[in-house]
Length: 260
Image (cartoon, rainbow, N blue to C red):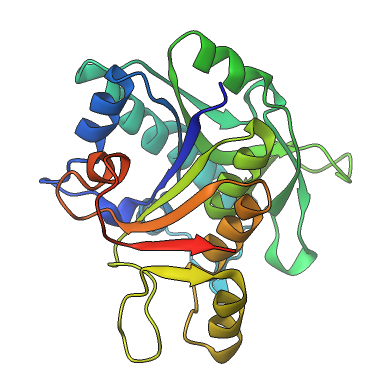
């Protein structure tokens, strides 16, 4: 239980030739303790369009009104979560799909009124993850969370949270040794586009301030910085490479290590 790895995967890293699920099953059979966190914003957008619900973004985050929350919950805690869980199990792995609602895993509050039902995690109750890990399962965690903190009585008890910060939250809650982000880029690059094998916390903050690191990479970096404070190894790697995850555990080069 001390050697847990949190793996964050995004929909952009998957494809017909992707080896991520195969790698996850291989690592589990090698007795690695894994917790998988996933998003699925692209799939949510697709289903919103099918339902005729307009999508609005503010500073890169989706504004989530009640109809949007209902679709996001159905897609992220339902379709996306179960597709990943099924893919692991059908290949001989052992996985259980859950959301932040289950076992009150992630208790959250609304970030601000402008964004609607978009939350931030305030408390992690890790018992359900610990029980699954001890029983030999990979928890597959959806970012749909429990809206239990500062919630008006007439609001739903469910809220959507960015999955990148959740990965950092779970590192802290479980004392995980490693945090790995599987992305659709080769790693963090400098202003000239060169991949940085190692990136200090101070340099990362400067690249964010200068705009070199922007958009969806910022919450990933912030999650890594939080994990660093817990003494964890933090990595951002290219999940599109064949067997990127197995190679990562074998210590092969590639991607960016966030360091002190």
